[in-house]
Structures are given as C-alpha cells and as structure tokens.
Image (cartoon, rainbow, N blue to C red; front, side, top):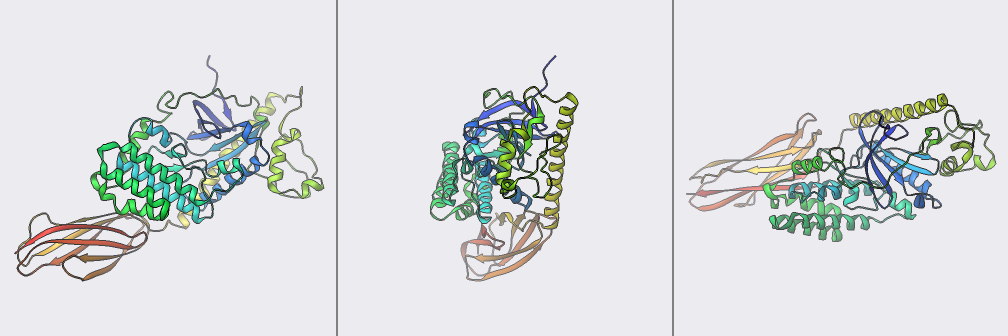
Length: 457
C-alpha cells in the first residue's frame, strides 16, 4: 500500500522540488486540481525579526495588483503558518522557470524576445504602481505551457533583506537576462544576439520602456521577422516537472506537519472588535487586552503565528480524529472559497474594465513584381491588436515625396486583425525603389514597418 502524498492546507505536494535563496519550492496540486506551487521558507530567514510581517505585506500588495488587472505575476493563493513552518501557496504552477528551460538547450530568438518583452512590460507595470520586483533573474521567470512569461517571488527577497529595491536594480536584472538570452542564441543568429545586446545596454541608460520598444520595433532582425512564443512553449512543455521525473533534481525531503489543525493563515486577519478574537475553527478564543487592541494588523498576524496557544496543541492534548478531519475540511473549504472569489473578482475586473488597446504586430507587404509606367500600386499593412476596443492612429510615408497620409481606425473587442491599405500611383520616366512606411502613432508605443517595390518606366 503506497502512502498518500503529503499536503499543506489542501495543496497536495509532489516530489518535484528545488532549492532557491528563499527556501524550498515544490510543485503542487491546488484543492481544485490545478497545477500550483508551494514555497517552504528557510526557517533561518523567515524567523528573523520582522521578516514574516514584511512577507505578508508583500503578498497582500501582489494580490491587490492582480485583482486590479496586472497579469504578469504568479498569483499567490495564501501564506500559512504550521508550527514553526511558513508556507507560501500559489494559484498557478511555478515551473518550469526560465533557468530550467535554458537547462534543456538554447531558446529560439523569437521566444527569447517574447520573454524580454513580457517581463519588461510586467516590470514597467509594477513601477507604475509604485513597487519593484527586487530579484529578476532566470530563476524568478516562470514560463507557462503556452509560452507566457510570468514573474514570481515579487518583493520576497526585499522582505527578507528588509529593504526596497530601486527600479535600477530591476533594470539591471532585466539587462542581465537579455545578455544571458543573447548568449543562449549562440552564433546561429548574430543579428538577434546584437539586438539583445543593444536592448541590455539601452535598459541601463534609457530605461526599460525604451529597451522594450527597441525589441518590438527592431523585430525584423529576428529569424522570420517576428516575436513568437511557439518555440518557447514547446521548450517549456518539454521541461515541465509534471511531465518528467524531476528535471531540476530532487531537493531535500520536505516534511509538512502531520496535523493540519496546526495551520493558521496569515493573510486573513480578524477584524478589530470588542468581542473575542477567533483564530480559526476549534481553536480557543481570548479577550483582547490593551496591547492587542492597539496592535497593527502586521503585529496581530505575527502573534497569531507565534503564539503557541493559538496555533499549536498542548502536549498530551492531541485532538480527536473527527476534530482534525473537521479542521482539514474547513481549511480546504476556505482555500477553495478564496480561489473562487479571487477568480470571480478578477473576472469582474476584466469584464468591467477591458484592458487598454495594444498593438501586437504590424506587417507591411508590397508587390514583388516590378511596376511599369503609370502604375497604381496597392501596399497593404496587417495590424494585429490584443483584441480590445479603441482607436488606432497611423500615418503612411513614401520615400519619393514628403506627403504624409494620416488616418484612424476603430477597433472592436471581438477582432484582433485589421488591414490598412495605401494606394500609391507613380508616373513619369524613372527607375526607383519605392518604399512605403507605416507608423502606428497611437496607442503607444509607436510601431513601424515598411515594404519596398521597384518602379521602372
């Protein structure tokens, strides 16, 4: 008979585990059966004065950002204390990381560019919200099965160190990421290597926004001229710890507490009231004294996790099986309810406040055949958006004169691809290479593309 998999607060732990500077990460299965993650903090770090409170505050900040529509972070489901152990539980898988994907071989330049663009966009959103990540490196970039790049461990290293990282540290981490991805491309794509190197230098001098725009506007230097997640998604699925025995190597054995009655969540703080404080079902209550009444939420959280009377059982007083089962069911139900409510609130935010219109790509195409005297040439641009409603402003420029053709285009929420044509009539005797350039001026950032044809008369 095989032993059941250990679990913590309803999250079933797997055998796929790896060490980081924060502690021990473990692939897990959430209560609703989805891929998730669990981080058991290093007790030597989480036990330092003030660290637990700062970790809780960092996670609560992340949850507010996610509920407000920020999609580039790994969402945290809960932080729980179990005796001396402190666990962070995520609502999404935390593997493979970019470090794990790179361990399987080089990443195609289009996929590397998508990592850089998406992580830069997330960092810019964090900075706009007044926070930073603090520890950007291949081990904190998670690549999903669809090839999407998400950031994990936001603010946790800062919480351990008791500091707030400046934006320059994030930019430096991103630049190092760009240089590492350039090296992984090898000599097979020298133009991509050069582009990533320029992006890294730009991040340090002109900022992440300019570096991101450089990658988008110069994507023609990538093989195929496009930024694509396809190869990255394939590589991520090949390195998934759920699909292999253990691509990261098996870390030290992790032993969760045997009695889940010892678990207390650190993210749901009791409201201040004149009545007794309740620390979960079946746990004793106590009247708040003057010190407790004046305590900050962070202090109450720390005491809830530290106070043995509210989080541990007295020796020889082990509760009965029915009590422990009831506590497990209550914890599991609470986690499931929290996940459902978070999903519902996030869905409400997304439905009630559609993401701003953004341009994914622009591709201009001109006739390949040489055009003769008095030709009316049709140049066509395909503009791909993120599917949001809004207005695109653009301008066409021709290299043979100073005329600028400006226009606007209304987009729909149920459509992502649009055609922007240019009719160009050439007359007179000449032999010229005619180039049409389309520049999307809004929404920002500006994106350009061009195409050429030969006119001979």
